[in-house]
Length: 415
Image (tube, rainbow, N blue to C red):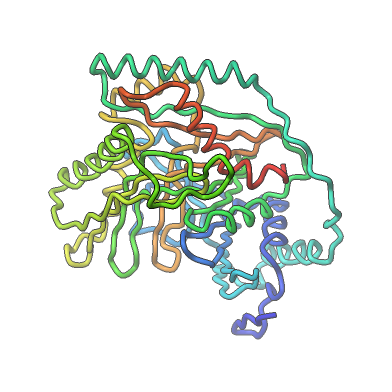
């Protein structure tokens, strides 16, 4: 076991693992977040002990280290939820603690109690195996399908009447779960299954909610070295053939509908750059990328904020970009109004944004896609599809089913 040294010797966190600390923080009612960035092996656990969840303006360059989460319905003059990074633990691929950032000190009574509860978990007193419960649908599949397809028909009609060019419609899928569900285990399964995604698990005790997801879409990234990134991600195809084998990337062919859908999102980002008179950016793509059981088209935009002396670019672009045309539509205002009128439910944190801010000096905020909310025994899966003039309602329903399956196939056995 790797020793993590502190000023007073071996840390009290020595030997503890992700699931034990996650469960302990949840038992104590502390807001917390687990995450793994795309293409990395490190997992981070943030525990907010002193302030719970608080609200603040997302001035990213001025924030203390923490975790941000916002609803879809966020205006650029509104605050977001913020989990202060009182404790941030970094774990290696084999579940060993490699770094401890503890703002409170190991003598803090709540920290000592947290560790004691985690040690109790470690001793096996609460590790009895409970059989996984079956998934029990709560809504009629055919009724949900017909409702969603009807909203797609309405959207296509509105597009043909020139109300907007594209709108992203979403739906939910509710399943029951029991206390046998182990969220940290589900998180670790997603980490293994989706190395290209931002995988996160967030506990919001004040709302009695857990949010688990594997998002492929970066909204804004600001690295301590000065590099800013955002991306356009749109167009969807299944990544596996009828036998379940992965289709090679070079065999994927994109239709006009998907190409135009992705181009609309890229143009939206460029329009945001134009609003702030930013011309010095590097555009790469579109390229076909794998995200779970789906392929998408992706274009990456990069800016050197040091060269431009523009340290607040990430905060400025966050306000301009959200909600992007990849989760809302084009133009933004009429498509957002259409979503409000026809979708029939509150998206909450689905298609909002979330991620670490100023952790290690870096900020990574992702669109909250491929996500599921756990609340009061109900697991609510969320999925959306970009609707254009060429959309076929049944195909759009199938796309949302594929997106729900991204999570369901990995974590379903543990619900």
